[in-house]
Image (cartoon, rainbow, N blue to C red):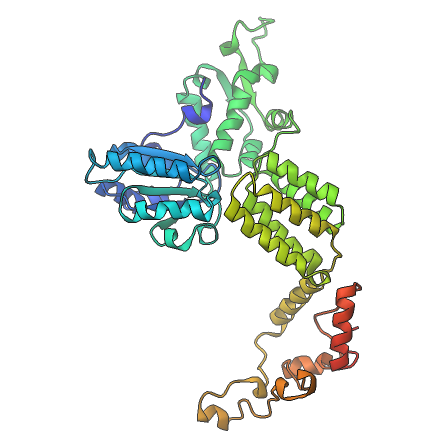
Length: 447
């Protein structure tokens, strides 16, 4: 039996839920479909908002061949095979290219994305990509320049409740059951704007497992005669109990997603490589996006290790780059290397604290004037006004250092030349050397 999310998958735009800014009357994708000509585009949005469904509706509406690839399981070989089949289909559809839908296109390596370029440019296929990640960072520039990017939004609670009514009335299985909806807060909270997740939860509480939970019977009957005679009462308690029944279930877009990444980062910060690599393994096994893990490692290298070991950021960034080049599952190896290295490194959040303090200062003090001697003087008028006057070119002085004011006057009046306002070196060998170097230039400014 097909799951509820598949049974309720719409086949036309009129049955499509949400994204009215794209598919509503007169909007860009509806106009494109009505014209009969589709240009390549990428759908960017969170999970469960209808990216795959929309691509299928377009293909069905225009009666076009529809090829689909998953970036998780497809390589360059599979891409080239699909392109060859598409070339043959063009013989039967000379006016419109077949649609090639690539789910999770952000997981394609650079070489995999390169293999698409020629076919997209020549119109052999019309590419429709789906991604949960910002295409500006995850899709190579030549491919991105050949595609429009359309942003999809989470499904509103109002639309989800409308979908609930449709399920109760139209679904071939649940419509035959007696269902009373008393509370919907948990349904909406756990769905989080994800249509697929919403339907999966409904399937769970109204489907075959509903017999194990809350139902009401006719007082005259001790046992219901069959499943259809049971009154399934949907409450927040029922939904919560069912979803908590399997504590090992991993939802990469829900609370567990954030719990595990938080645990990995805190284990790195706490210098426990065993715990850090364990939580990374949990995320990998649960299907987490490797790019998401890699980004968090880069952030941790900057925030938690920082200047105590500047090589940490280099290694984390190299791991991120390696994941993009290697693909999966080989990419897990550089991720693991970076994870263990970061957890084993000395820690400092001095740079993190410095930028936060500086930002707070900017918010409080506004646009303080830059000292005149630090300003450029590209015109005679600006030079006449004193721009650049008195500036000391550091490389002209011994040790490549000239004692002069760099901060705005208002901040110097707060002690900026005598004490550090933002950067406070922390006690570790690397920053001890930095402190000594800076204090040799500025006196005892950096405590």
